[in-house]
Image 1 (cartoon, rainbow, N blue to C red):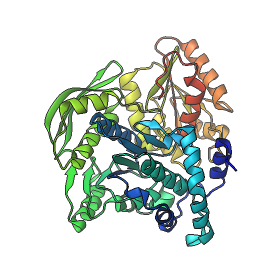
Image 2 (image 1 turned 90 degrees about the horizontal axis):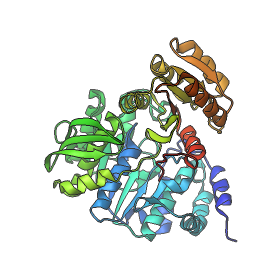
Image 3 (image 1 turned 135 degrees about the horizontal axis):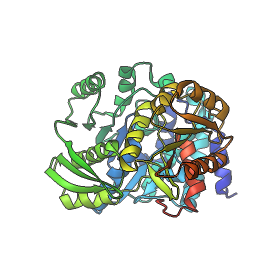
Amino acid sequence: MEMTHARILTDLAKRWPEHQIGPSLGRIEALMELLGDPQRCAPVIAIAGTNGKGSTAIMIDALLRAQGLRTGRYTSPHLSDPRERIAIDGRPVSEDDFDRIYQQILPFVELVDGQAIDGIAMTAFELLTGLAFAAFADAPIDVMVIETGMGGTWDATNVADAQVAVITPIGLDHMDYLGDTIEDIANEKAGIIKADSVLVVAGQEPAVARVLLERASSLGIAVIREGIDFALLDRQVAVGGQLLRLDSAGGPLGDVFLPLHGAAMAHNAVLAVAAVEALEGGRGLDPAIIETGLADVEAPARLERLRSTPPIVVDSCHNPPAVQATLDGVEEAFAFAPLIAIWGMMADKQIDEVLALLNGRVSYLVATSAQTPRALSPDQLGRRAELLLDDTTVFVAPDLPTAIDQAVALADETGGAAGIMVGGSVALAGEARTLLAAGADQPNVQ
């Protein structure tokens, strides 16, 4: 019997949740074998790191498509619908194709479930990863751009061997599963680096760089490093984004428009260029390809402006380095005065460290939560914010619609250049896009 999309999503939600690791590649390897190894259908650019993985994947995808290549991109988590994770030629797979492929692979998934490899059935993330590889083989595509979900070594995406392994900045996150030290986390993420890879590395803390370079040295593979082999030379704020001057395998290039805000996104852009050049054997890309590819980038929930009166931007930042980068970006690009934050976080995140970053930089904070059991309640978040935010006025809203109404009222009362930022979790950003995008007067939606 044919399953509805809603039924498929319900069945996925019943599986082992993706914010927990079932540390084994056994289940995904078994599924890939049953499906004929679709993870080998095309060359792979794999991306691991703590922050910037998704936006870097989007930029790599755009640069590849600017060359006329057909791409398959797998990212996580999603904002509203799991279909967002699986993009072919830059667009989410259709609901019909998602549902069709899900039902095609389900009997094989159930065979793996029955084996209870390492004691559990296939996780939701493993199933979606398998679905993505099957969709890419079915398309077919020329290059796969694969973002790890969490970690690297035991991440289901690591069933595919990358020709280019990209490591974005690594910091402390998911410590319950990846390790208590930054070296432990780096070692786990270094698992995507394989014997036949080229390693492309963003700027890292020295301790992280040592781990990654030791891994590359042990495998005898080439390393392309930010600041040595490629670099962001300069950037300037521009209407709707920024102008970059970068240096890569093709030499210096200036006046490249990127329709995203903040220094972090600029660095992700030069990392993406270096990754695509590595896939090309280290040859410099045609400047026209770089200009066209980066100009066409669409990155939902990365300082995405969804309304202009009052202005509301949405960001998926949820750990200290990402929140720091987002605050820098919103101040540089929008200069809201006052800045009003609608904030919600998952209970297992570094809540106090994140709230401390908001102190003095956010004039008002409306504590709320996404509609998920993992979320810290608005009351709990509000109480912690009141303890930590000496220079910020804190309000509490039971849900996001109420929080938006309250923030809009505050913006109307304060007037001037007041603006609103929604942040703190991917789930909250997704809900905000759903609420705001349909009625936005200046939408920026895929």
